[in-house]
Image (cartoon, rainbow, N blue to C red):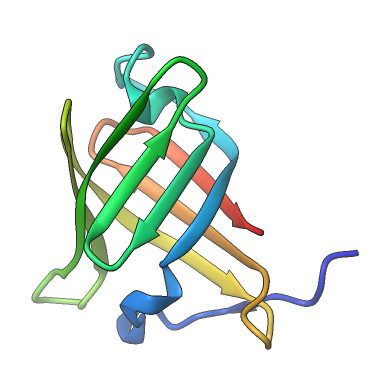
Length: 119
């Protein structure tokens, strides 16, 4: 049973809300390379400053930070992996009151959209 999830104000999004192990619940590819680790990813692991992307045939690691635009303070994930570098807009984050369950929506520069869930 899924607990009730609440939308998080993205202008006040703390980094620690993104840390942990996330599984890819849904994905829409656009012009992204279908063979890339991000396009094939099944899991993302965000630790402070460290990112690990797991896909069925490959794994890629690197760094991530949250950046905000100056006008609306929208959060972007800047991801630098060994094989690619990209930026994704955080379009939605929902969490249960105890933080045990979360859903994260990312929109990448390539047009790819990924829905992540934890646990």
